[in-house]
Image (cartoon, rainbow over all chains, first blue to last red; front, side, top):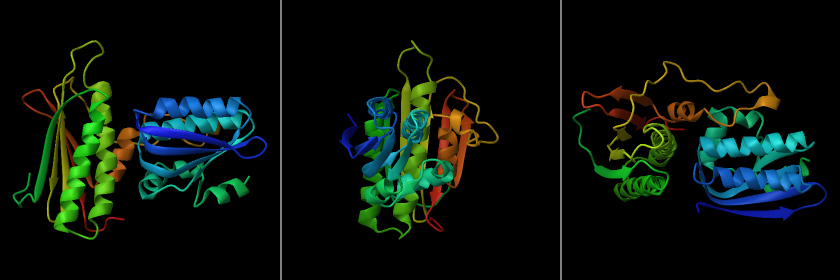
Length: 113
Length: 154
């Protein structure tokens, strides 16, 4: 296992999903499935906390995009909190920061809903 | 290949399978440790971040696509090198010939209902280093060379 996933419900239709470890090919499917489950269980407004994620690759970005799509289909959204320098790098060069909006803190991401 | 001295080199031969990614990360960590102990350049960590991003993308590409499904697991060779002004990675496999597209691009993000969930690994790799080249060697190997210079690393 390269990643740990902790889900914290935070009010109506909103949950914080904290990831710890590496978000890559080895963990992307697990993250994708967990995000979909959180949405299906009634929390389409997601904040994904990347503060403890040491590395993200394109497979990991794919999992976040999948979560974003599931959230939006259910009337919500997916926002990124606490991306480190490497995460910000790939969000910027991929231009995915246009749709996976990064916030400096979990509180800011939650408050933006 | 240049003639300037290699300050540190790390070589690993791995089976091209998912579990090998852990060894690729470990090799990158060893390069980072060597860089830190030698205090090469203040831009070193940022350069290594870019190289790490690109190496993982190319290694993942090799693991997923170099050898046909059902074929015996082939090799994934990784060489990491630290120079005074840059870091380099060489990755190779003995799999099917690869042809690097002349241009790499991100899929269109304007249609939010149809966002792509993959297919941009090579683009990310190319954007993360200063040079990314692929050659098919006379010995029938795919060889990737990735270079990230310290100067101007942002």
